[in-house]
Amino acid sequence: MGKNGKQFLVDEKGQKTAVVMPIDEYEEMLEDIHDLAVIAERLEEPTVSLDALKKRLKTDGLI
Image (cartoon, rainbow, N blue to C red; front, side, top):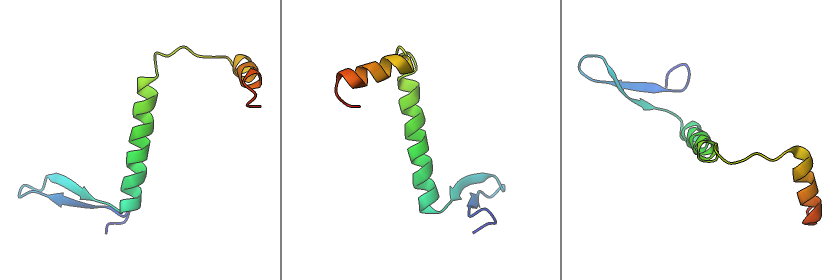
């Protein structure tokens, strides 16, 4: 592996075509991508103030 734990595969012109990385780093990256996708999907949803959220949680008996 390289200094940062990654190796690159190159074509005959020396252009990077793929990367080899530790599986745990890859899985962490997939989780981050999923989290960002969820955020993007919910971007247009209305927001709720902290006070309103606390009130709703108390009303629902969750706090």
